[in-house]
Amino acid sequence: MSGLRLYWLDPNQPDGAFPDPELALEEPNGLLAMGGDLSPQRLLRAYSLGIFPWYNPDESILWWSPDPRTVFPTDGVRVSRRFQRTLARPDYAVSLDHAFCRVIQQCAALRAHREGTWLGPEMRAAYIRLHELGHAHSVEVWREGELIGGLYGVARGRVFFGESMFSTATDASKIALTWLARQLHAWGYRYLDGQVGSPHLYRMGAIDIPRAHFLDAIRQPEPAAPPEWPWHFTIDAPRDPAHLEKNQRTNTSRTN
Image (cartoon, rainbow, N blue to C red; front, side, top):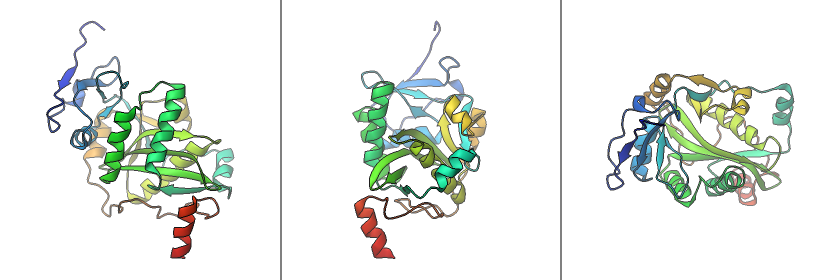
């Protein structure tokens, strides 16, 4: 780690510029800067450059832009025969932007148990604020009124930056990812970002692309007809009221 050089971001200047992502370190892959804050202005500026925060709550904020970047082409999520049968079963329902706070809290609880507490209160509050501003979104998976899986992330350009997911039932997070990717593709998004590769992501169809190609997708204009906030499914996704949360069932019955 000799010769390690990180760029320092002033926390008192949320509109301050980020360094060029091409200046990120090769080892650890993508580490670019430290410091700053998690204000909406800084976070949106970061995502517009393909940069995301990842750090432990008792440490300085660290900013990353890996090369290559692991992504799902939105029409490229791999569905095995077994998982296709799972998707076709009538025992779940999906929704968008219905329970963002609960999804991020579940993601934090899962990560704290398995990997440590990187998704701390400051991070959760920052993404909840982005959600309130219409930039961060969630997908939820329900079974008999219970939230069993989901994921959340940030939309910029033609990329959805997947941040974290959780599952309390078999395949629930895979269900969330698959239906989100299908909806994103219908809206004209190119990539669902997975940040850094893993065997699990590759098995589902994720690929590695050069950082420069990833940044090109972010710079593209948002889909011609951007969805309204909060998001809702416009494709034929499972919406059986028997599985949705109680207040969703009521809203569904009123619109039928």
